[in-house]
Amino acid sequence: MGKNQIWFEVEENETIEQCLERMKEKGYMAMGRKEEPVFHVVNGEPTYLRQKIQFKGILMEE
Image (cartoon, rainbow, N blue to C red; front, top):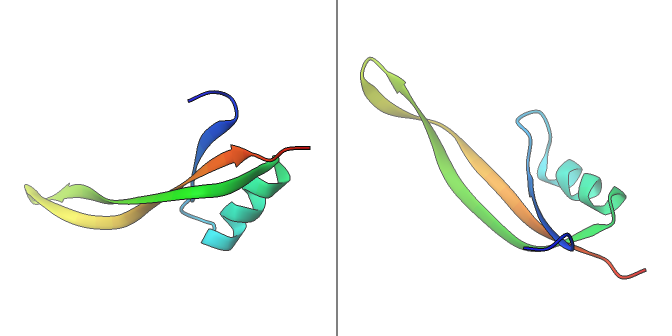
């Protein structure tokens, strides 16, 4: 991936809309999305923690 494509992760303390707005401020628009579960170990058992969401941003033409 070149500089005109970058993955943005939705931070734990922001909404999807805030992430998309942050991308726009940096000149990127969303062209893809991926989600994956995040687990942590509790009492030796993998336990679901949260969903990690990422957007693929492409650089908008000036």
